Image (cartoon, rainbow, N blue to C red; front, side, top):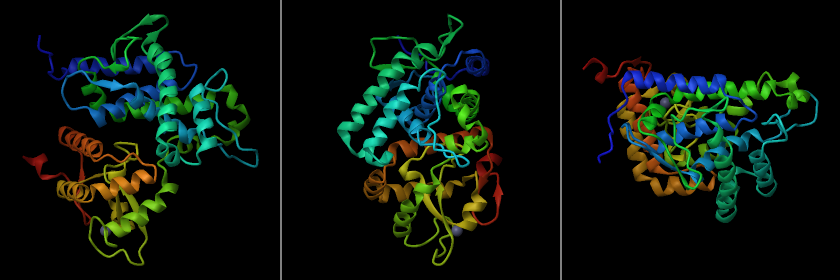
Length: 349
Ligand SMILES: [Zn+2]
């Protein structure tokens, strides 16, 4: 029998959103795993999926990698006032075991980059995290007061993969920004309200930034690399960057897709960077960016993965085609360079 790959109807899409909302509002949360799982599924649907109603099959190791990305930053000691650094508690009971796994890895490796580069240890870590993901949030996410509402996937304890139900991939891609924001907000609330974090409750105003802000401090080396790659010119206006303040720009804006992927970085002067802000750049820049990535793929992959970023041209371009499709479907404003920000031509067609 042929699989029905038609996209969900508006009613089905609304029902999906409603169910996400129900899970986040009425589910019980003893740790932050469920938020991490929803965020991971939605990011993987963008990276690995397409805009159809098909099922998407996800490897537990890929889900585990997303978990490690999320928790690596959050497991750093949180510094506040004059008190001693404190590792935020991600569970109402003893510390969440994935945080402990990450902390153990941090004792061996100073950076996420170094951990990722040690293939054997990285695989071991991913397997351990995958085991917990499979036993815990995957089992409980769709459970509401003992009632199962399976709308994302069917539970199959024997499988090595997690297969999303038909139309779920589409909805995750369509509503990823809403899902990210809802999950991040609930995650911050959970950490803030968790009595185990009482010792640092005073220092929590910037908790959101600590938990989810992009990793700007790491980008110095990326800037050096891009300076050479772009021959000291701004990616957008092509003017010389000599003696100018520069910024590493997320070509697909962080606000649309809050994860660092190597091919997504470009170097811009501060003026262009500030003007582009949270906008997508117009399609001529998209072509320019793709061409750059094809031309320098092996160099970008080698350098940025050695700096610890996920660098995979296929995934980055997948994210981009998702983002531009979203822009077309939803009439996003695009930044056209210079000072103008207006609807791109396709909007008028
Ligand atoms: Zn510029």
